[in-house]
Length: 335
Length: 297
Image (tube, rainbow over all chains, first blue to last red):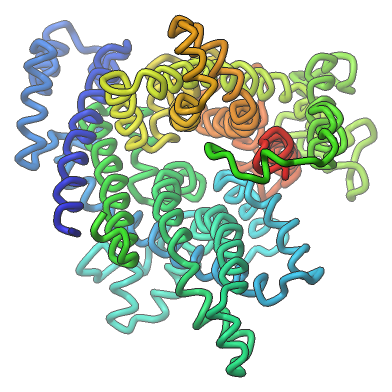
């Protein structure tokens, strides 16, 4: 039953999230590094320090701090950012849409590019074209998003200076938005010039995140497609006179896509994790870039909120993958 | 590979060549392994090979382009950076940090991860539940964020970088070794060892461990490539070793700042990183293929 899977997975997810909360909390407290020392002005006396500590609840015992924090988290209160002086939930809410747009766009690009190349490779099987795809892909499989991002900087900053290197949108255009989903909103409201500007900012970070995933999709999907193409139902369709492209797209793909879907889901969590460094490289204002700032500034409440948010996103993706795999595979539905 | 098929029993083909011969014949392993040996030589003999002092600044010779480009200066094959330091020498010295991290961090992650994986897979029950839960929790952290967080808390430096990589990546080994061990623990030879009355640690380390090693070696090689990238990322964010030590990640970060004036400062370490990561990956792939009895056929 799908419902049983959902309930089971949600229960497991809660345990994992609680574990993440404990680990990050302990990590921040056990390892030395005083957030108050980072934020006081040079002239502050012991009284000022004590007052600041009291203000952020840092003067209470660890267990009390943990209890206060967890109680807040459960009620949706993640505390106040020490450096930004606003609610952590507000900061996260204002930055998350940028990362969601980036990650989803990268996922779509990866599926289109990876799927397209896998299908092309299947059509070209046992030709030099397939060997070229395999050879190149085995190298590209090793290249992480960090190296892609910098290679793209090199290409588009030096050889082909047509794309903006940093940011999400031209500041002059970043007005009149009702939501923080700039790309989706500008497309839906028909402001295509603005959408084009946002897209030009997103090309490089999107590619950097999408290409490693695309390489994984190429390898697995092509393998599954080639196996499916040797099956009897494909032979039957071929005898019926369908063309090769039809065989791949309508007969083989439907049966071969399962494993790729499952793996893409798992790899999507890596993609989301990759936003941390890729957003940094392109100064893209999402939660990944925010996370590095939070760590460097030792903004404990913000770090805690961000880690929990990432953990939640990872777990939700995994549950989504399990559900879609189960929904697509009748044998698993009753497992 | 858990099941005996009739073909494995009546296999009359000539005995396969030894592992070493097979490895040397594999072009992937030979090329990638050769390149990594070359890097090891570079790292050890860096002071002898590097044409210049990697730290020597020359403010009259800043952002000199590589040989062959207009305004290139003799003696600076790959040009100079924003402080007039020789890019080639810095790339050569950068192999030291990258390879140290690759071998030490990946080795320790392998040691700890596989030990926990062996325990989880062999003992099952409570031990397995505990370790698997821990892995689940770990997997819910974005790895780059966790590594940055750890190094920020531990303080910058090579030690912190290595600790951070070990703390994050032991799960990769743990998951694979656990699954392998569970498979091996069902095999007849383990049952036989139990029947003879071998102690459990003896079965685990003398019987099961050798059969898990091939998978482990391939995984370890892949992890070395990952460790090189993580170190570069930490250097890029400014959290790795101090700026007196040339690192590829640190060079990449400087190059990123001045990419419009001096693209080679970014390009040179980036190519080095790319080649190293690809080499470790191809080596791991080749090793997996050569050492895995199933893939070998």
